[in-house]
Length: 324
View 1: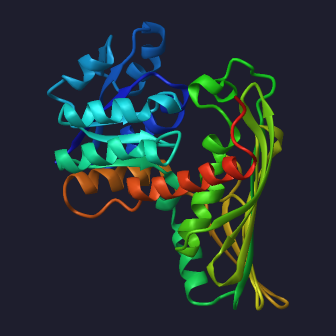
View 2: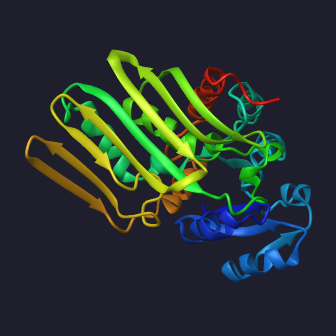
């Protein structure tokens, strides 16, 4: 059974990453796009010949030849259109973050449960084998007793003021955009929930542009996360124990930022594992299609997304809340 996909909105990310992933994934086909702009539709049509282009989102949801809908709209629109897709009988994959607060995800969860359809957040990193390897290494005690996690995910888009990530009205900010990765990946690797204890955030026009957050996990594990839209491009995560450490040098955008690489350091010995040719977006689409067919559970639920959003909410609260 081939899962037939439609995309709501001709976003740049849908064109560069998820559209090609749907096209390349086994058991999936990109068949429809909703956009009012023919110029934006053209490269999608080149990617998927025969693509049906709808001029309205509701028209795509009414398309009987669409099984699943990918929603890459601005952050503030994910829940609304995710719910509408489910009510139209479509399985739905919404871009991260699923919502702008943990509580706001609940209508999407309720719609999923009422419909019996598959609904999830597009959190591609949990589909990459490097993350499953790190999770296993930590569980088996490869670093001894884990003491500290350090994660950084930063970039600079100050030269693009029109970018929706720089607009509070469309859910902009460093934490909704890349904080979901440092926070969620730490939760995924440890299988535990943190308590935020300190947050220092720089704001511009209602958007968090630099965020430095400290948290505490059970068993005395501390975490420090730095996320920014006003710092030089960087990403890494470090799991530091009393008998070793694990370093991931391209944890979030492997292939684009650098090679997927896990370094395990114990004393004077360093073991390196690499995954040079893995496309985590293709794996994500294939996992979603498998869930739709009932072959396997999707590994990142809306409840998982809600847990990460709760950490973002706690970070804002620790910093005194969003500016009015």
